[in-house]
Image (cartoon, rainbow, N blue to C red):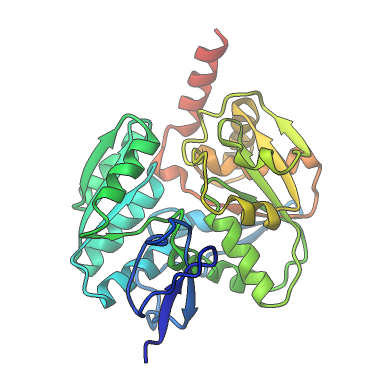
Length: 330
């Protein structure tokens, strides 16, 4: 008997067992897992178990210290472990940068050929790293075109499909086990929603209640159709948040249920928060500063902030962000 299978909560489709689809082959909805999927006996490249650091009364979960510099390593490592277990020889992914980089690294480790589709707005430094890891890089005009191109290749290669895949979310859920006791509100950035849902599901399955403050970029605030933001700061543009650009997440209704408070952040607030984090020793990318901007806007003196991406992949982040805002305001 198969130890795990995918099923669709929306239309009732259920797989034969131990076979992968990135979404329901009948109705196109996101799938869920029934049973127990195999897991690596130990971290593949050292992902997870990131530090939880207290600074001025606030807790910071340093997810940017994962192997490729983002929390995405938790989901990608499990996804490609499954891909290898299912005898795939190639992997495909669409990404604005971080998931693509993570996929390239873990594909190299598992001996899988990788093809990464990215929008032209992706940070050049991240693209350089993706190519350096041996992945084939394909650049598209928009994020949506990148996703459509990756989906076309999903019949022959394992499609990580981080916005859809329940395996990806399952991998990220380990962060909830590490936090253990949610004493303070947890401030989480959300784009495709995988981190938000992993934390929400992880604590729910453990029978623990946690208050989640969800932060979205001004130009990709998909949750506004469901929730009135408690704060909107920093203006209407969010070009600095290049990792928070997913505008139509497939699990949007669950994201809304997982969110207790919504904050929408624009470029001016992002730059201010980014400077504050860097000058406190936290070298994060601009998108990660969204949670600090939200904490400041809500006046939270006690909170747990998830810092998601490393600024070492974008070494000129503060300077380039200042130049961008100066050009916009000129």
